[in-house]
Amino acid sequence: MLDITGGDEDTVRAVMSALEERWATSGIVPMRRDPGEPGVRARIYADVLRPGREAP
Image (cartoon, rainbow, N blue to C red; front, side, top):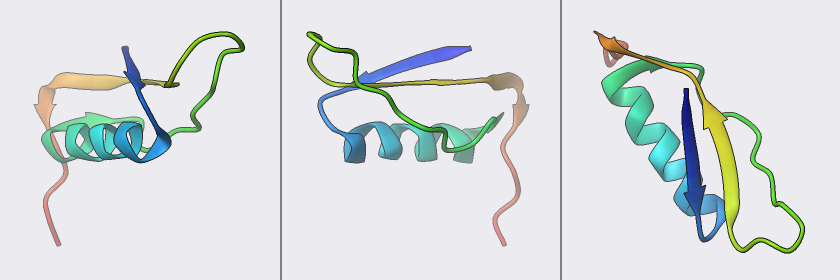
């Protein structure tokens, strides 16, 4: 499980996308904003021992 925090949704989405290229992950997941906290958060699940999907 990886918790990702970034300043905006585009940054968090880019991080999730890059991780998905390297490892088998749960993909691009919904992001959340916590009241009173800066930034955007997402939680993904990744199999860091298994390589990512093959490119088409």
